[in-house]
Amino acid sequence: MDIVFIEGLQVQTTIGYYEWEKKIKQLLVFDLQMGTDTSKAAIGDELAKTLDYAEISTLIDEFANANAVDLIETLAERLASHLINEYGIKWLRLKVSKPTAVKEASAVGVIIERGSKTNSSNNGCCA
Ligand SMILES: Nc1nc2c(c(=O)[nH]1)N=C([C@H](O)[C@@H](O)CO)CN2
Image (cartoon, rainbow, N blue to C red; front, side):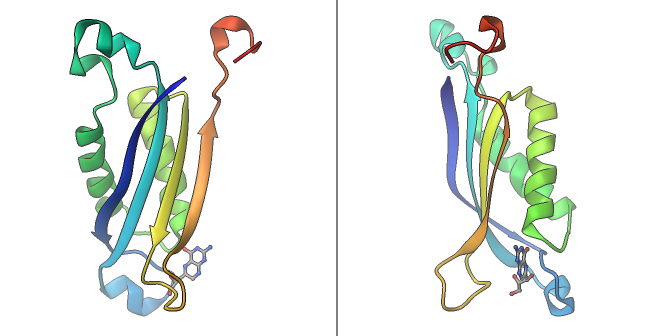
């Protein structure tokens, strides 16, 4: 399986459990790996046949700003689900970091993996 990735995508948004957090914007950083077959785009040199990382970066910014939630777990889960449904992604790994949340740490956050890397056309054998 090939991967299209986005690393260090910075998004300012409203996120947090505490009341004071609901009145401000804070920095989130997104790292995303999406399993795909990049050869389909490479054969004809066609953007339409791959996952457009620029389009998906814009989508992540808009999604985070349209979905104010308490926990980064909730944002990560909803975003992963949206990407899988919208782009037919079979497997993804999403890291959401909140760099300013704990002053003693450079970043805190969550990493989730959804879907399967197994190629369904070979009956689960020998991925
Ligand atoms: N596992 C998590 N722990 C915490 C979260 C979170 O989203 N997931 N959020 C907070 C607060 O919003 C915090 O960021 C305020 O500094 C605390 N712990």
